[in-house]
Image (cartoon, rainbow, N blue to C red; front, side):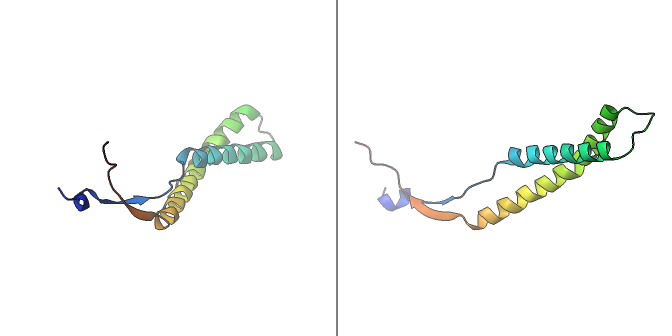
Amino acid sequence: MSPSTHRRKVSVRTVPKLMPFMVGAVALAFTAAVLVVYTTPADPNYSRPASLGYMTLVLCLPALALAAGAWLATEKILRKRATSGYIEPAEEH
């Protein structure tokens, strides 16, 4: 075979990690839940930890959706910045 048939075009790009986005969303939701629970008057029917858990769960759902959207937007931007080049197999000695 000729050397030109071994040549391949490849694309190289960076991909953002998903976990930092998700962990940041959960941390932000928990912080917002703490602020909401401890700045509003306490309900005698529910304890503060129970209210904190419920508010964290309620706020995590939209926060995770927004984090996933931010990750997808970042991934799309980085996909446009991809570089391409050609690779050839190394010669065997």
